[in-house]
Length: 385
Figure 1 (cartoon, helix red, strand yellow):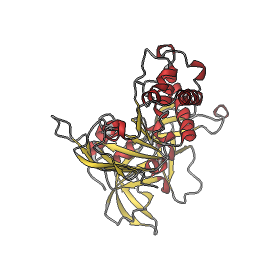
Figure 2 (figure 1 turned 30 degrees about the vertical axis):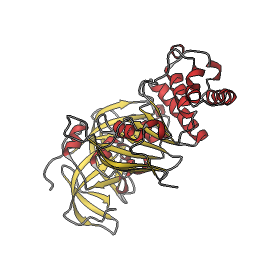
Figure 3 (figure 1 turned 120 degrees about the vertical axis):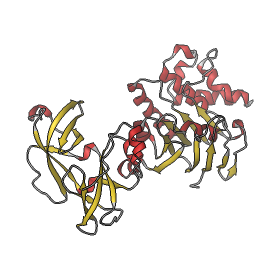
């Protein structure tokens, strides 16, 4: 069944607030998938998770699990468990007893409890640590205990609320792999809440991007990155370069020329079949650009222009450049696929060619200046040549 969990028109306004924390949000979770709610702090993602878990009651809307309306049911009647950011382990109990707690409360047989707890601790690679107390283990180990405790009652849905936020970068990366492995082993539905787009992109089957209480876009990671539905999604999921433009001519059935303020006319793939004279916003990801000392040999469907390198940031696997092209400063990322010590590096103030394929610029019709201001993106000009 595709529509395993459904949230229909959820709205929540907290007392004393005029702006909804969640504003008529609807989404459907499929059985067994990893679904992420992604967005900045205050966008409503944790509120939506708490509503699904039964910790908050919506002002409007309904929640269905496997076709059953659970909107008014308390958390303990929803077959949903939650892993919180602070782990919420019992400090006076051993890891074994922490994991066993739910089964003991459900009065399961002793032998069943022993077998299940050992199995869960083995699954999270902590069986040899079973007698320790929470203060004797690391943050990553605590997180795995919390996950084991949440899974042992075999819930239909596991909610994970910023579960890796308290961990350092290396540990977060390792725990993402652990979460992926655990999900593959248990096969239940995960709803993952995070503000970190890297976590959401690497772990999720699908992502819902939230902004100001609304769901801006739902799709696979590749879809929301390559084909964002709004300026907010384009800017929040990774980095991008925005240009205000106007369609000035049709080159073929699929391609149009755009007049871009402060740049030469550029060729773009017109998937939306926009007509001449229509205003658009062109989003180009930093990694789509190429920098070279010579102009590209094959100009077919290639945009190219001269520029000057303003800044170079070497990051090991890639280098980030800021390049001045006419009136625009472009953010450009070049991956290091070759051994760099055999190549002549670019230098500050060097004149270069900047190019990109017409297929790699994505046109947007929804563009909100308030979104770009919120994300620290320079405002675009009001006029188009």
